[in-house]
Length: 409
Image 1 (cartoon, rainbow, N blue to C red):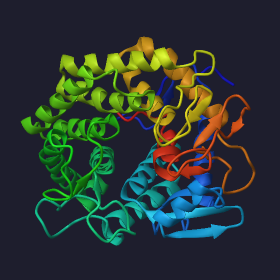
Image 2: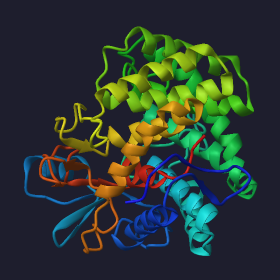
Image 3: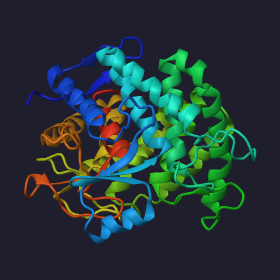
Image 4: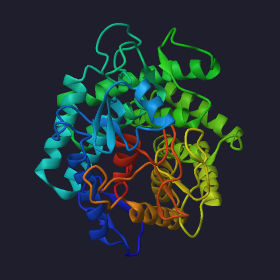
């Protein structure tokens, strides 16, 4: 494998700019990822017209699988696997963002068409965007099409605001067509209003704002910081800064309370906060958790061990749903602020490139499954309702890892 180093996509030059890296290796990985989305059955039709399914489940004959089928009653059985069909706003947005980056870097018209088809689904066809009703809901996104009551999550909607603003910056024509900036800033206002209330009163239910998520974990809270920092770039609203400061203070004061599976989320929130708000607290918080990732990372393999409560745990387990995917993205962008950390990003990237699935079956070829067992050098390590080897997520796993050679910030 070629020597790997930090890669990024220039804001004003859509060629992939790399140092000390084999372009062909990365391009091969990106094309494999594209082929998996198109051929695996997660997009039917495969042009993105009806969005993208949440995930593939490889086993349907164990307790975890049955719990999944009971909880998510929208699925299609295939020979040897099952597509969990709910159309989630965040999965579709993360996939659309991947396709847009492929278009920017590889230039193919098919990537542009797929991006726009996916965005058409999100903004015009899906009904997931709340455009009317309660003022506290307008601009928010429902969790998926299979829920018929208000189910709005802090983590998912943070991604919706963040990615819309990123797309708007890179593609003004889509900003105009979908009102990306206007709707994302509306959503940021809701996040800044609702999140502090839920954080101060964790027992708040679906009463005033209809939001869900454990605000005490960076999985939810740091992603709110990420979205508000990006919104602050356009609209320097003091409420955005105050919410970010509140949560960064909490993460600094409680750094020993979280597992490794939370550290990457912290970086995703603190790095853009430092970039756009230029405050020492964000830099301090990012450095603290970057050092925690490095301390936990196996220097030989690059793995940050799985410790998430919804996955099997172990130093030998590569969790691509809650841990390594976000740790990689967080470290990628932290390395731009602190280049001495690039060496750690390199080895993490090398690991994920190495384990990308080469199984020739179309529902597996080019994907990252939910968990890899380094002890047996194969996908495995156990299964859970939301995590483990048998869950292959479109968003969260395959789309974000597909951003691996392209910088978010």
